[in-house]
Amino acid sequence: MPALTDHFTLANGVEIPKIGFGTWQIPDGTEAYDSVAAALQAGYRHIDTARAYGNEASVGRAIRDSGIARDQIFVTTKLPAEIKDYDQAKASFEKTITALDMDYVDLYLIHAPWPWSEHGADYREGNIAVWRAMEEIQEAGRARSIGVSNFSVQDIESLVGASKTVPQVNQIRYFVGHTQNEVTEYCKAHDILVEGYSPLATGAILDNADVRSIADKYGKSVAQLCIRYLLEKDVLPLPKTTTPSRIVENADVDFTISADDIAFLDGLVDTAR
Image (cartoon, rainbow, N blue to C red; front, side, top):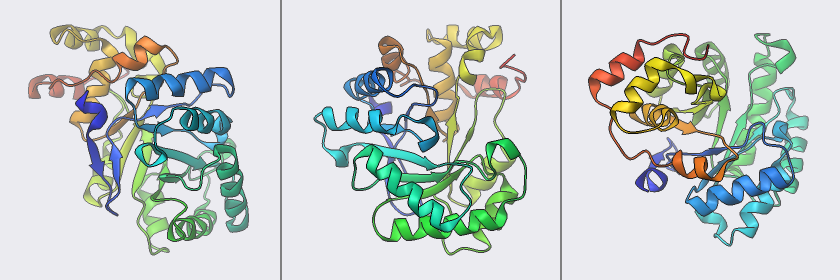
């Protein structure tokens, strides 16, 4: 399926497959291993994990056991949001690399601009410190690309203003009815690729009648329409499911949504309720 073989090109020239397989909320062990194995079997070549997910070891094992060359698989992981110290960032990366059992990752992200328990708190100095560690990790070839997640325009600007490297990616919550236009437009203007996690609103959007009405026009599922919507916006979708048939279905998105239907979807709100 072309959607699985197409790429975006990051600002530093690294190619990243246009659809990623997300592993948030997939427990370590058999479930994570089998899900990643099924995704790779289905043709996915972009796997997204995080130290906070607790499943890096199973993700890494599934990748190794797939028989697919490491350089054919794009692996993303993340520095825990709670770490805002240079030395701790360096140490955390070593734990991640050990868990994954890899020599390098393709993309390493700051998971959030603040610890999850302090949403919105000012950790600008801490972010600058960990970003310096990440720049060094990239310079050493141990992360091919570096970026951020859940960062606002202000968060990015404060980081860039004190650093030599602009993040190559910002991974944010993004779905029909929740498109975070301010930060998305800022990122596009500064050549920062936007990745969208929870493109199905963690499943909440699947019962939305308005979205279903558009999906039915194309003979597609709501999930397929929502994933395609992100691609039409040049946002990289990271769908997550542990069901093998849905893993395949989520990548079968080689169709085009009309401009009128995009406009209709753009106008929807509260789709996750």
